Image (cartoon, rainbow over the protein chains, first blue to last red):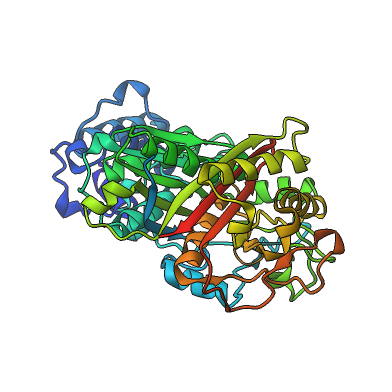
Length: 80
Length: 400
């Protein structure tokens, strides 16, 4: 299960940044998501996946990093 | 003393964002008031802005930016473009002076309504100085960037403070005005609870605000932003800027008597201070854009204050409250009405005091009763803003 595609859709819907415009391994900060926008985006991610993001992961810098964290949180939530 | 020139106007209002078109609509007596929030227990009326934020912001830039800041950024940008001042002044020589009564009301309301999921950018969205900060970032203004929260006098105070800064040379250019966006159910309910909003029969929403009329019942809330670009006349001349009018007088006073009840002598002190600074006599002033909120008590007090200062010359002062048409913009009222006053001087026309079918004898004034009233002799005009808290602000403009 990878959340990357859903994250790409979410960032497109919310900020109008198309998946083709955002390399999953490039810094999202460099795409104009400053610290404030990133905080807001993480809030939307929580809403979308019905999860609670661990605070320690606020230093994620790429969409691929973020997908790994979201995957881990979702996996932990799913009963084995 | 350095004369202060108004070289740019920018509006984001219920009547649109083109100053000449807004003024023309007001001259025709067009009301922007409409019923809002049909699901509230008591119907209410308000003037809202048909605002396309995508003209000024990408979706990404909108993160944590409340509507009150969006309107401010738009109106301030239009004012700077109108003044052709973008890039014309050193960033640290530009000041931003913004009136705002309540900050980002919609963001705060959303925080309450969203249950325990409070959006993380609620605080930077609703803080009252956010509009000024966003204007500063957009215009790259690195001088004093200040917010004045003085209820209904906020924007008039901001303009007066900006004029002082221009006059004493603290800044070369000031972006001065106000923004307010609080047409949300919680705020409407709060104003209703205070018994200050106009009541109306079905179908009469547009005419529900009737300043100085015997049958007046209060005001309607309006949203919007309005900014003026101010600079010294010498600075304006040097860079070849067009001058709309000169801001030659301003008067600030406080009643210091009661939190919400207006006071004749307090208002009279501000009126006299504005005249004194402009070195004019009451008879020199032709038009007054009144505070005129159409409350039972407020209109009578304002009339008495004008009578106190104008004395036997009261009849030659033409008066209208344009709040009947654009609503009460609270923290932005002073700058929208200042812009209207400036446009009146430029066009030599006076907007009507709409919806006053029968003047209250206790409000006996020379009201502008007709739409489209020409005033070829119009040379000087004042704009009044009187606030809860007792602060009174009067701005005096003279034809360029």
